[in-house]
Length: 61
Image (tube, rainbow, N blue to C red; front, side, top):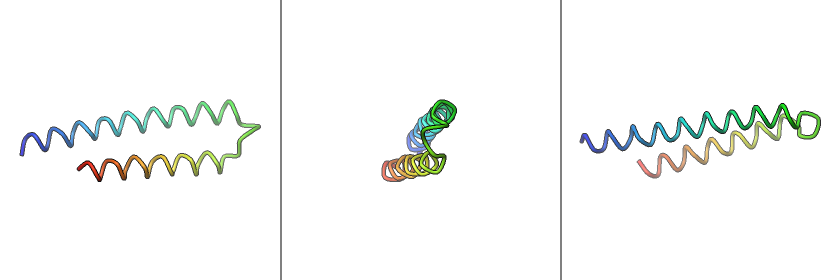
């Protein structure tokens, strides 16, 4: 039980780190490519990446 809790906590921290890193990249990209890329495309890509990480997290758990 303790090992399961530890693994869930570990994957949660990995998920949180990836989420924060990707959010930082999205903010940088939206600042840098503001005149080139529409914000809707960034939002769609961000949503797709978030659901993909969530799916991987649920399949592992």
